Each structure stands twice: as structure tokens, then as C-alpha cells.
View 1 (cartoon, rainbow, N blue to C red):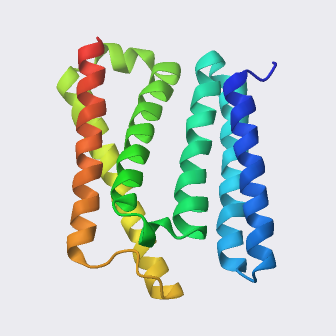
View 2 (cartoon, helix red, strand yellow):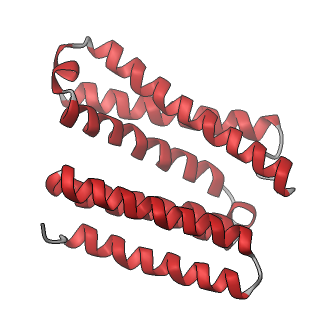
Length: 183
């Protein structure tokens, strides 16, 4: 199957990630280069899944995932936007939760269409909200581990953690309601 415009744009972003890895290695920032390398690998895996299993929709999911990885890890971590751009953390939580919620629905539609057709709308809404909130919790655990092991300050205290989880919750509600209204 040929790469569509979404896939091609995602490959351009992967090139930017690769340049970021080389730059970080030249600056002796191997830990951040490692994070970008993992992000690049994850992006390649998502590309494969999207290209071979999700049809035309897959190219746009590939692009959105690669955009998120680029913004969260290259700009957020490597270029330190988390500390220098006000609201960066909130924006990344919200957009990532939106993307993951929509992705979960698309994967459910592809793999288990009867579940989405037959389950009560309130159950699907609750599942998407809990999915987004649960992934936000995993993200917060990752921030805690980074703060503890690497000496970063991503969490910034309980207020920041709760704000992030509330943003994840709101994104899950938005995706869930949009799905219910779409039907």
C-alpha cells in the first residue's frame, strides 16, 4: 500500500525526531536522546499498524501520533517547553488524551464493531472517560518516576498532578460525548 499525504508528513516529522536525537547526542544528553529514540521507534510501530490495518484513516492517525510524540518529547522534553512555555503540560495532556480516546474508539470500531453498536451509550462514554483518566494516571506515574530517578521536576506537586488528571478527565468526556452525539 502506498504512503498517503498523512504518512508522508509523519515521515517528515520522524526525520525531525532523528535530527533531534543527533543534536542531543552531540550535546551529551543521552537520556533525552534515548527518550526520542524510543519515541521514534513507537512512531514507526504505529505507522506500520496504521498503514497495514486502518486504511485511509490510518494515515491521519499516524500523523497525529507522530505530531504528539514530536511535541511531547522533542519540544516538551528536549527543548524544555514544559518549563519555558506556560500551559505546555496542560495542552499536551489534553491533546494526548483526546487522541488516545479517539484511537481507542477507532480500534474498537475496527476490531469489535458489535460492542460499540450494542453496548449502551453511557457504558461507552464511561469506558472512554475511564480509559483517558487511566492513561493520564500512567503518565503521572511516569512523571513521578522521572522526578525520582532523574531528578526532574515534571510533577511540580499535587496541584499540578490533579490539574493534569482533571484535564485528562475532561478530554475523555469530550471524546465520549462526541462519540455518543455522532451516533
